[in-house]
Amino acid sequence: MANSPQSEKRARQSEARFKINKMRRSRIRTFLRKVEEAIASGDNAAAREALRQAQPELMRGVTKGVVNKNNAARKMSRLSARVKATGAASAATV
Image (cartoon, rainbow, N blue to C red; front, side, top):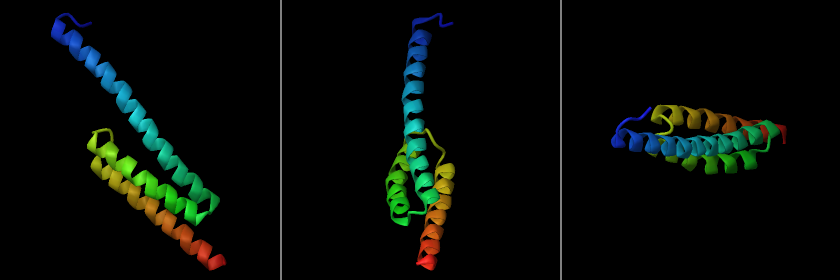
């Protein structure tokens, strides 16, 4: 429990920051889920578009301190490789 005015303020700030960061993480996960769903459906054009929209969201999370830089880079690398593979697979079946 906060005892001094300063610690009460820090507690309020921490709670507000937690809510904002929670919204940011949720938004990032939503964009990543859309990429995953597009990959699963096999629609390469939709997957590329979803990836194009997810990248700035993920990088914004990095600048805001919600996601670690290396974690975001790894996610983008793996997702882009999977989207690329989806395109190669769809081109082979056509």
